[in-house]
Length: 267
Image (cartoon, rainbow, N blue to C red; front, side, top):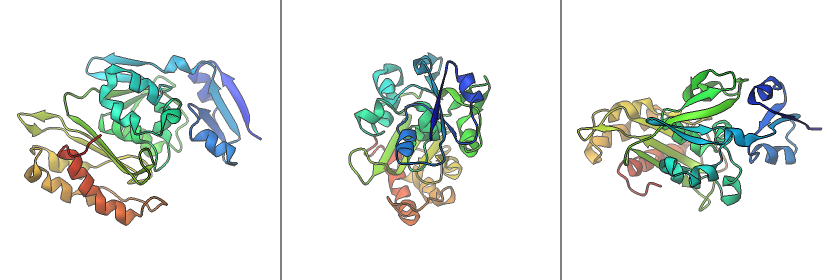
């Protein structure tokens, strides 16, 4: 039997955690599992008023997304227009109306397309105890993390500095064969401080540090990105699943990274 506890604050929700407990955000993945008899979940904790964590606000050169903000909320906000293509890639309208920022960060492979984008955009998390941590760190420890996410802060990129691409077998909104997000700030026409993140290429979204290093000081043309394309295999160890084999994912990753970097078919 699954029991449900409703609380007033995120701090109360975190305090109610423990073995078999899951926090209910949008429920798009959690409730599917429960309805199909997931034995790992015996206790669900929910906020009485989740809309209190559903805002989108500007903070200088960054933007803050509440953990309960949905993909539909993102699509309605002109302040995060750079994330619209990412939000549109998450399921259909019914899913986007429910799927939350916080839930996407915890979504298992091959889901979590928004988390891929946030990782590329230097995301920092405000946790339920008031502390802050980098998204990259949480992704490495999320299976044992007891705190909950209150909000996510990410860079607001300039112009076309941010790019996103998702590859699926089921059109138009299937789960990812792979997804790639790139933040490509430039100085004097050369890349400076690139962040490249891949989804569905590891148990969680991951950065590609060898690719990032190869792009430093490069121009965004075929000659400039060649070394980065050759470096992809150094950073990734994709799994096999029902969508694609790890071998296939590795073979096509440089092809799609090239398309992304050269602005061919990004979305």
